[in-house]
Structure formats: C-alpha cells, structure tokens
Amino acid sequence: MKADGKNTFIKKGDTEDIVESVLITFEQYWQQCMNFAQQFKNPMLIYTCKNIFDYHVYC
Image 1 (cartoon, one colour):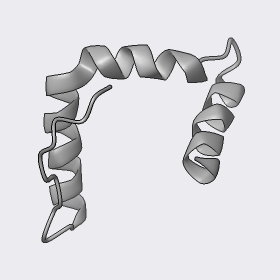
Image 2 (image 1 turned 90 degrees about the horizontal axis):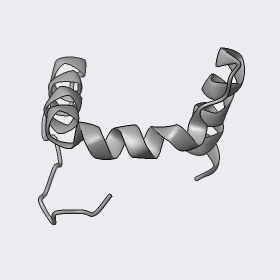
Image 3 (image 1 turned 180 degrees about the vertical axis):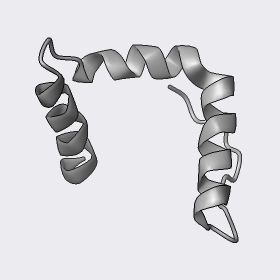
C-alpha cells in the first residue's frame, strides 16, 4: 500500500465518523486490503484473530 498524501484526520472522531471513514477507505482500497490481509490468515480462525491483534499491538 502506498500513501496518497491526503490528510485523513477526523476532527470529530466519534464512532459514527470512524466507521464512515473506514467504509469509504475500504471501498477505495479493498484490493490492497485483500493483499495486506493475507499475511494474517491462518487455517484456524483463533490464530487469524491473534495475528491481527499482535500486529496492532506490536507494530
């Protein structure tokens, strides 16, 4: 994924704003998201979830 240099700061930042921003971003970049997400995939769902959690905590 490459940054496009746009400022994506959400001034209000309540849950509704965040969900809207995530949905808009996913619509635009879903193919890149699919490629990125493959690194977390594991045959066992619990390990897929742990991989995602670990990425957010440690990266």
